[in-house]
Length: 310
Image 1: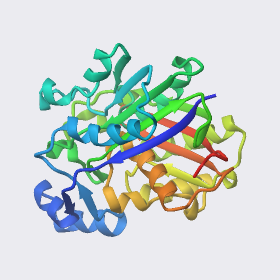
Image 2: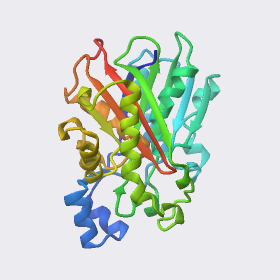
Image 3: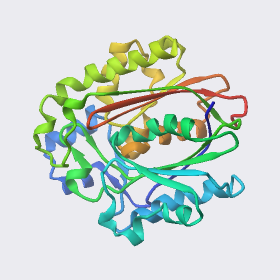
Image 4: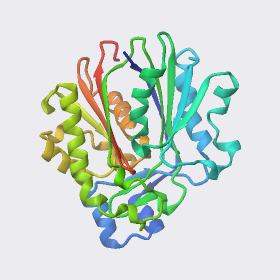
């Protein structure tokens, strides 16, 4: 049985407020008001002068150091964008040091913002007893077309390093579910591309159906969940999902939306680590990580807070 042993986060030191982001993205006054009042966005970490490598290293280095310089047998970098080469290989290959030491390394992107959650299921299959795996999640919002999903969300920058293994840990993985809506597979990154046709209407039913299917597969009712730790797409959509699926608002951890924006696939792990740091979790709590990636893929993971949680 896979456990999450530890999580470390990193963010660029530079922050922006919503009005600054609105100016750089060319948002109208009404669009800015929508992102503020209805979608819940406030500030973002973003630094166009910082490359990807230092951001990921800022999460990886303390994680490995406080775990006895753990040497994971498998290391995966999850990124929403198909490639990170815009920053040049010399500054973006976080996997190189692990590869040079003979560890098995790979990147994963096909599930877009849901990739980090699906890698929990992958690692549970890859790791033998006694082995650990390292999941790295993070990338740069380096272009306006990447920072903004029209009338939906605004990207921030953040990284999560997640150490997993079969040894006892902070969170026990109770199950995973991943579902696809393949009719929305094409994604070139342009705001007006045709693949978005119909996605807005399909999004809410797709999210709700996936969440219901996950709870059915896991054999629990919505009320059994202590918290849902979601991707930070926006406040409005998550309140609609909660209403449709029988979740109470206080079961949704939505603080991350205003604090950091939508940090690609790192959101659920950022929210998990933040909820822990703020004392919101107790042993025995059931937590649901949820993320939906363009493409479209929805992934859920059920975690149980263990007695070793501190």
